[in-house]
Image 1 (tube, rainbow, N blue to C red):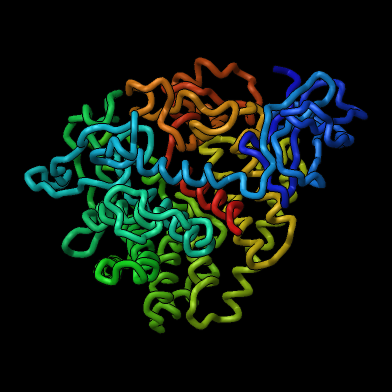
Image 2 (image 1 turned 135 degrees about the horizontal axis):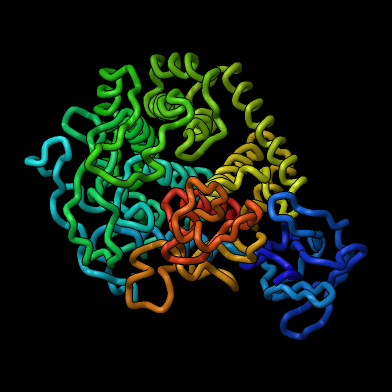
Amino acid sequence: MKNKICINQLGYSIYGTKRAVCTGSGLAGGSFSLVDAVSDRTMMTGKLTKPFTDEATEDVTAVADFSSFSLPGVYYIRSGRRKSFCFPISEKPYTELKNTLLKGFYYNRCGELDENYAGDYAHGKCHSGAAALISDKSKFIDVTGGWHDSGSYGKYTVPACIALGHMLYAYKLFPNSFREKDSIPGAQKGMPDILAECRYELDWLLKMQAGDGGVYHKVCTLNISDFVTPENDTAEQYVSPPSYQATALFVAVVSLAAGIYDKYDEDFADLLRSAAFSGWIWISNHPEPALFVNPPEITHTSNGDIPPSNPNEIIFWTVCELYEMTGEEMFREKIKELYRSVCVTEFTYRGTGGFGAMAYMTGTRPRDIEIERSIRLQYRIEADNLVSLSEKSGYETAMAPDDYKVFTNIHLMNSSVMLIFAYMMLKCPDYIRVAGEQFNYILGKNPMGKCFVTGEGSDPVKNPHHRMSAFGENDYPVPGLAVIGVCSDDSKKDDYAKWNIPKGTPPGKCYCDNNFCFSTNETAVCCNSSLLFTAAYFDAD
């Protein structure tokens, strides 16, 4: 469609900014109407903004702003012959999305899915045997459980820790968004559902710690998983050696988790603390942060294998969490040593310094004024930059045209998490407005008019690169899974994308909704988790 109206298909809060994007010709001097979807009655009219050409997509766009309207109901936007999907305006439009995203982690569990909870997506036990150490194939360890990381059946420590960081901080910062309890199979009674689900992954992470405190980097097959459902994936799995990156992030996340689970299970919290100290001893005995090298026998990689842009950012999160957990001066001194060399606005595989900043700025321990100032300054600079990028984008995304290279949705959600935390510290309303626009992009206000979450919105992703969805017996994919989105970098595109995305396609439109297109349509736990963090903020009281 050349002329369309793109909206957040999950709807808008009565309290927040409400904007849609009109594309196509004849927008100059145009107007729009907000129409009640039940009565077909026009509820308000307004003028479109001055149209301009969005550089990333080459679309001519204009914005319809209906933020002043706050009457709950179901509506659509009309402008000329254009008509949007119907959408709600309500007090809490994202509660169902938040719960669906959380259940997406349950569906990705490695093991057996309970039919009473998983319904048509239930399956028998998968990957239930011990896995061999790739460094010594005569030795086997139990690494059952945890979440399948993405579209295949590997389980990777680094993305797991990043996903848990998003989820545990979402609970810690926005606890009122997670009142749901007792609906996760096997959960401890009274424990919030999000903590019950996180515990399933934490139990797996504890199995990934070796006897000397180091943490195995990943468990996967030698070749990429076959295109089968989980219980039919019977290829031998292997455990990659411990890595500095995996161990440091493991120590960070179990230290964070220990303080949260104290309220619900003191024995489990103590176990997490013990694991954190063992991991720190291993790190102390490996002061040179040699980064992970994929074993030559393993023919595929994940985003958890990508080295961070700055190794200091890994250990920065670790020492910030250890400082909060223990209050020990040695960790405070290490923070002082590192903070000047760390980017504290990243929450992805590229860097985890943002989690360190969250630990330091929201913790209970004494803080140093210079470190606080440095963190606030970095957030102000980066947040202002993202606001500027959003203002230059026809779809109000905080990305430059050459930023749509790979993992676009992960990067957009990283920006949203960063902007939310910047707003919490600095109280600039532009930051939360732009965070909301990144959220809107994922949920349909994008050039494809696609909601990038399975089972949600009027036009959701229908064919994710997710083996359980693509090769199961259900007509619809597993719900509540976010995909990684646009990929314009030819060197990162899979063969399907290379064949089906025409040459010369603008970078912001390089997307395919196809289950073989892993470069644009693969699911990933750390994409789900950052979107869950954002949904929790906008769902909070």
